[in-house]
Image (tube, rainbow, N blue to C red):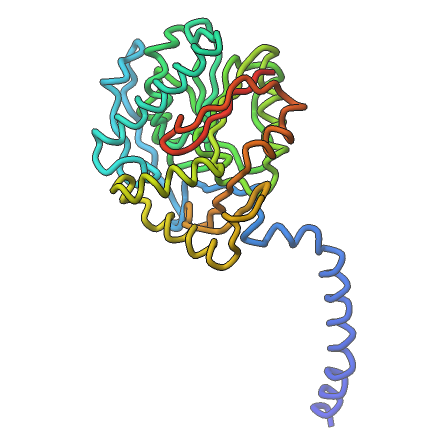
Length: 311
């Protein structure tokens, strides 16, 4: 008899409980959207990673800043695909810094006068390590959402640079009007959500008259990539070329007059990574109300296009 009553009660009570759960889930829907793997807000890659623990060993710090040539090279897993050898990794960092400095100089901006510089999405400091050659007295910052790379940089590249971890939510731990130069090498190529908010956040921490140097994948960059790949350049990007071709076969997007598109390709720290492309005029129209466009430079960052803005 008791078992029978229990069964009846279970049949009556269970639907009531489920109804309340459904109502709660409905109220929480705006928060639950953050579980979507395509939404980048508030993403952070902690030191514990998949192991569930980490150990940071103390390193002897030099008493004075050291030459970029004497700084250690990070382990290969922190290269983010730049170069196949340590020599190539360093050469690409030097090349991209030299090109940026050249573009700044052509715009009448003297890097030696910069007091504070931010590498937004610095990874393991591939470019940042070379800045002391041009900005001897500058305060050099690198920031990234991957704690492992920031931890390595704090141990081995400080001095001469400073580092902090952040999230993919558009917020930086710096006061307004702090930096003379902010650069983002192949970062907005992977920000599918909140790109406008991130640009405005960079603008907030940039002083009036300061510069933002942003590289993007635009229509010209895709053309250069395809042309160069056919000649045997960028063999390590075969997966990327094939991914773009598959996406184009499905959507015919490269033949359309698109403003921007995003397609998932590759992974970063276990998360799917969007590959974002813009029409340069579309992006300039969107961001020029926030900052003056000083120059547009094709092939400034490999095959990518660089835009130099001034606040």
